[in-house]
Length: 285
Image (tube, rainbow, N blue to C red):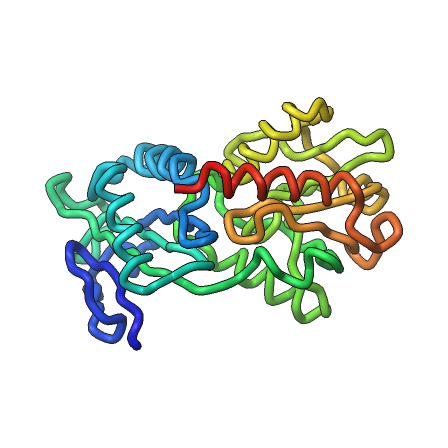
């Protein structure tokens, strides 16, 4: 059965979905997006994704195509029509269709809204037990990484460079300091047990899963340091992991060819993943 997608007010089979060649998302990457994970047929941290969507739209002065409740109804309808139990829902909002011009079109230009589902089962990924291997790649992205735009060419190239090296993913590096992963936030755990991750700024994406994980860690009495950490500090970490909407909390067991800890997911990372998954399922809608 063909997957059903949503485009600008209509639910259609994916092979019938159309977006104009003059859409600014296509011409200028003038668009933002969100991906919400689905477990047991329910949406994970939907409210957090909506908060970030609103922030991204505001930062780009991009009009909203719908309110949060309308977007929730679209997400749920796609889950129903596609009988999706495990996976995610991708949503993109662009500035709409206009003749190619660097100047923004009139504010009355209707934004484009595209929403579709994808099936995956990251909750049972084998990397949960083995951990990821990550390579260091220079961070050559633009200066507003905090806005979740569809400008993902460099992260895609960095991920492919990591694969060329036989690794699973890349951590991006700027001035000797780790910023984040290609599609995730990066964390290390020091020998003192402190969790370290880069503080929020224009340099990194304000991860929805990151925010939830830090709140849960604080509730467990764990010490979190939000600060930059160097490539050397990463190589010498006791544990490491990433967070993202798709991977949730995923251990990292090798960084830049160096085995982290004993080469297996560490106890703190395992505990954080368990706590996060329990909370995600408890609050899913």
